[in-house]
Amino acid sequence: MNENRLQKELMGVLAVWWREFKVFQREKSRIVSSIVQPIMWLFIFGTGIGATVNMSSINYQDYIYPGVLTMSVLFGSVFFGLYIVWDRKLDVLKAVLVAPVSRISIFLGKVLGGCTDVMLQIAVLFLFSFLFPAVNVWGIPQALLLLFITSVALVSMGLALGSLLESLEGFQVISAFLVFPLFFLSGALFPIDDKLPAWLTGLVKLNPLTYAVDGVRGALLNINVFPFYLDFGVIVIFAAIMLLLGSVLFSRMK
Amino acid sequence: MAIIETRKLTKSYGSIQAVRGVDLSIEKGEIFGLLGPNGAGKTTTIGMLCTIIRPTSGSASIAGYDIVQRPSAVRSKVGIVFQDPTLDTILTGYENLELHARLYGITSALRKKRISEMLQLVDLTDRRNDLTRTYSGGMRRRLEMARGLLHRPAALFLDEPTLGLDPQTRARIWDYIRKMARKEQTTVILTTHYMEEADQVCDRVGIIDHGQIIALNAPGNLKESMGGDLVIIRTKEPPLVKIKALPYVREVKFNDGVLEITMKDAHLHLSGLLFMIPGVECVEIRVPTLSDVFIKLTGHDIRDDSAEDSGSWIDSVARYRQKGK
Image (tube, rainbow over all chains, first blue to last red; front, side):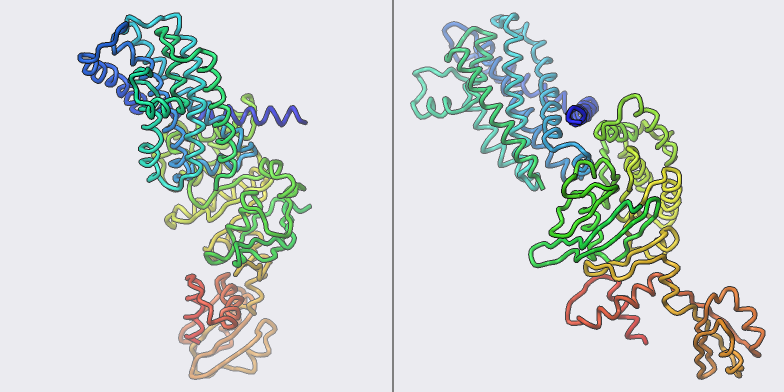
C-alpha cells in the first residue's frame, strides 16, 4: 500500500517533468534567446572590457566565462520558476493540481523540469569552451555538478516567488531587486580581492551565488577565493533551504 | 448504492454562506444536473466534492471515500471538466491526454490503448497530433471531457460544459455527454443554467438557489408539479360544463372569447378536446418548462426578500414575469 503510494507520487513527478521537457522542445525561440544572451556577454562585453582591463595572470574573457555560465543558470532558473504565474493565469495548472498527486511531487517535477532546461542550455555554452584557452576541460564535470545544484536552488526560489505572485507585473520588481543584484554581487564580472571597498566585499560575501561562481571558476580556471568545501557547502545549504521554502509555498498556493 | 452522498454540506466565506447544508444522494450511472443562476453555489458544491474546496461543515463521500479524510482517494475516483478551459495549449491533444494518464498513474501498457479509445469516443483521432491551441471551442471541450474520463472515474463532474459555445456546438456536446455516460457507465454530475438543455439530458435535477437545494426530482416530475399543460383556445361559445367534466382537465377559465384549460398531457388529448368545441379560431399549447418550475420556486423567494439585490438574470426574468401578471 505504502509502496504503491510512493510509486504513484514518483509517476507524478515524472509526469510533470515530461510535460516541461515537451514544452522545452517546442519553444525553440526560448532556447535560442537563452543562449544568445550569454554569448553577447562573453564576446561583446568580455572583449570590450577585456581591451582595457589588465588582469595579471589571465585574459578577462576567460575570467568571466564561469561567471557568465552561472549568470545563465541564474536567469534561466529564476524565470523558469516565475513562469508558473503565467501557467496559473491560463489555468494550465488547475487540471494538474486536482490529480491524485501531492503538491510536493508536482513541485519536484517542476524543479527537475527547470533544471533540465537550464542544464541543456549550459551544455550548449560548454561547447564554446574551446574558445577560452585557459579553461580546463577536465574540470567541466565538477562545474556541471555545482551549476546543477545552483539551478535546483534557483528554480525553487523562482517557483516560491511565483506561488506568491498574483500577476506578471511582479516580474519587473523581482528582476530589479533580486535577479540583477544577485548577478552583480556574485563576482561574476570582477575578482573579489582587497581592491574592492569593504561594503561591496561584505555584500558579495553574503550572496550565495558568489560561492557558485567561485566554485565553478575554481573547477574551470583553478582560481579560487574560497576553498572548494565552502563553495560546495554554501550552495548545497542554499538549495536545501530553497527546496524547503518552495515546497511549502507551492503547497499553500491559492 | 449511491456513488455520491452529501450530508449538510456547507461552505462559508466569512459571513457569506455560499452553500448551506446541501443533502444529495446520487446513484451510480445517473446523469444529474445541478441547476441554478450564477452565484447560486453550483461551482462551490462541485469544488467541495472534487476536494478543491474544503467544506466549512457537513460531510460528503464519493465512491465510499470521505472527501475530507481521503482526498487523494477521492481525486483518483473523479474526473473534472472545469468551467474555464484548462488544456495545455502548447501540447497536442494526444499529449494532453498522456500527461493526464501519467499524473493518474496509468501504466504505459494501458495508456496507449486508453488514450486512443477516448480520442475515438470524442472524434478527435485525426486531430490528435495538432496543438490544442488550434482547436475550436467545441473540440477543446470534447478533449477535456475525454481527459476527465481517461482514468475511468466513478463520477465525472462537468461545470457548465456548454458555456460560451454556440447553440449548434452545444447540442453536439450534449450528444457526447449522453454517449460517454452510456459507454463508460459513469455517473455524470453537471451544472448549467441552460434549463432546456438540462431537461433533455438529465435523469434528475437539483435546483439550487442561494446555496440551498430547493427542488430535487426528475425533470418530468418537476414540470408535472406545475399542474399540467396550458391550452389556450380562442372561441365564442365553448361548452364549459362538458369540458370541466373531462377526466384530464384540471381547471377551466373563460373570459372575453379566450378559453384557458389546464390539463394533463395536452399532446394526447388535444384532438378529442377540439372536437367538442365549435368555432375554434386558434389554439396555443404551453407546456411547462424547467424554467417555469424555477421561476415558480424562486419567485416566492424573491418576494420574501425583495429588498435584497439579486442581480442575476433569472431573477430579473422572474420579476419581469411577475409584473406582467
